[in-house]
Amino acid sequence: EDYRQYSQKDLRQLMALVSQDVVVFDQTVYDNIGCGKEGSSNEAIPMAAKNAHANGFIEKLPGGYDTILGERGTSLSGGQRQRISIARAFVRNAPILVLDEATAALDSASEAEVQNAIDALAKDRTVICIAHRLSTLKQMDRIIVLSEGVIVEDGSFDALIQKGGVFASMARRQGITTTLGS
Image (cartoon, rainbow, N blue to C red):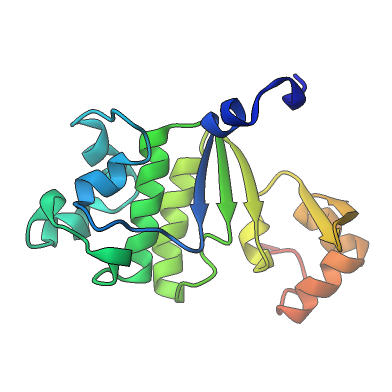
C-alpha cells in the first residue's frame, strides 16, 4: 500500500518510538508505561514491563509500580529509563517500531540488557533503526546509507561491508573490518 493515502495521525498510530532521549514524566511507573497507549489495561502494563526486562528493577523500587519517578526520571539509570521506554512500546503494540539511536548513550552492560529487550520487541514488526553505531544494524534486512539527505548505498550489512564503499569505510573507523560473526 502507498503510505501517502494515510493521514499523518493514522501513520503515527501505527508506530512506536524508542529514542536515545527518553522522556520520563513526574508520575508513577505504572502511568509512565501506560502513556504508551491510552486506556492500557491493568494487566497490560506489568506484562509490557516484563517483556521489556524492566519488571525486576521496578519491583525493587520503594513503591514498585506506584513509585513516582520524578521529573526526567533522574533516580533511574540510563538503561532503566530505556526499558521504561521499551515497555511503553510493548504496551502500544504498534506494527512499526522506530529505534532512534536507542542504545547510543548506554554503557556496554546496559546496552546488552536493552538490546535483548529491543530484540524481543522487534519480533514480527517492521523496524526502522537509525544508528551511527553500525554494529547495531547487523540484524537489519536492509540498510540505507544517507549522506546529506541523499541515499548513497543500500543493501544488507554483509553486502555493504563487501562493497567497500561509504558504509564499509564507516565500519572500518568503528573497528569493524569484516562482517560480524564471520
